[in-house]
Image (cartoon, rainbow, N blue to C red; front, side, top):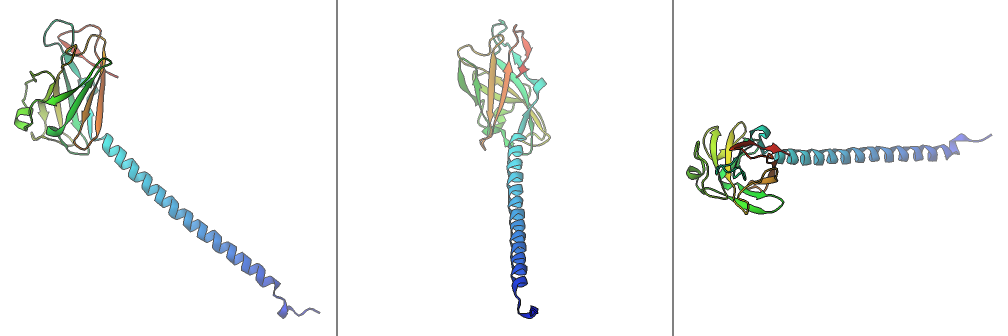
Length: 199
């Protein structure tokens, strides 16, 4: 007869099972922690991306091009509406670039002071400058959520504007370095006032 009190073989099997269960529990906890970190990193990246995207917006149906010279050769004044988003934008620190397939040049603010940059119902007269010509909001230089500003840009360059059927891009850059692009195309025939097609 075997004395079962001295047989320890079952104990080593139970010990192995306990160790295996402990390893599985540690792996589950470690995996849960890693998934939580990944989730947080993903959420932060999403919030930063959406925050940048929702800084400002353009009204696609509100982009107009004018031929102020009246000769039907080119559009030399572009107006569009900018809408405030999640971030406040200091409009006196906005910079712009105008680009076509043939040329690229900067567009400067018509004035460094807000009083000279915002003129209700006026348009810039100096080539290569922009100004705020209409404002729905509290009237200060900060574009905030729920506010909108109409921007008028007097173009410059070799062609002094946008030729019939020509594609262009207007880049608007905030002081924080966020860039928004407004790609458009002039109509095939230039009228005194033209609706710009947004690409």
